[in-house]
Image 1 (cartoon, rainbow, N blue to C red):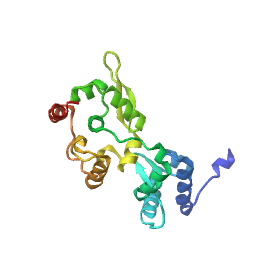
Image 2 (cartoon, rainbow, N blue to C red):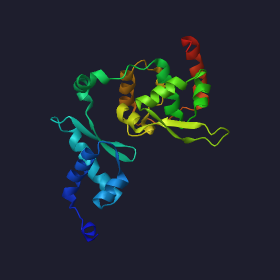
Image 3 (cartoon, rainbow, N blue to C red):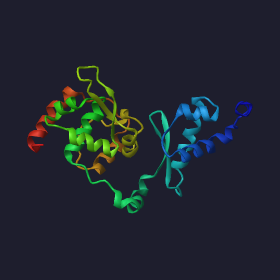
Image 4 (cartoon, rainbow, N blue to C red):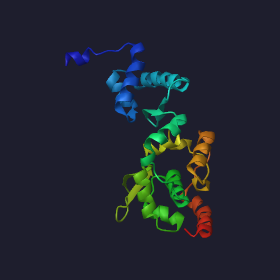
Length: 220
């Protein structure tokens, strides 16, 4: 116990300590947990992590990044390493998603948390199989139940969604329909260009009109 109380890192040691924690974790570590491990406050953690993020971003010889995802930090590979990693994991790559899947992802991302019934009210068709695929992909997850008859499950986007789409929180989603994108590449490009634009938030009601038009054209 006394050894724990005597634990203290100098300010210079905090950055490599954070780096080591993120590397060893392999998944997002919250600000609070980092502060608890290092014996400092959250403000100090954020200050140290801001510098560490910048160091990784400006290092032309490195293949890694440190990113902030909501209230957590995570170590990840740089987008430029995608082709190399595709060669490494090519046998396990996911098949491309359909336009209907992006439409369903849009409804959830812009209106979360939502139930299956709310998603289907927007799309006009059953979305059970698509929601299951998005869960398997790791882009959405259950986040409780709605206080209504039957206690239907609620869904929201996951940390994996934020990580793969290159944003820190859903507040950085561009104020436009995700369903207008044909491929993941188009969506990623737009997210990069529009990050920080949170002037408009799509609602279930607002989404209904545009979605019903596309459903009639697609027949999906």
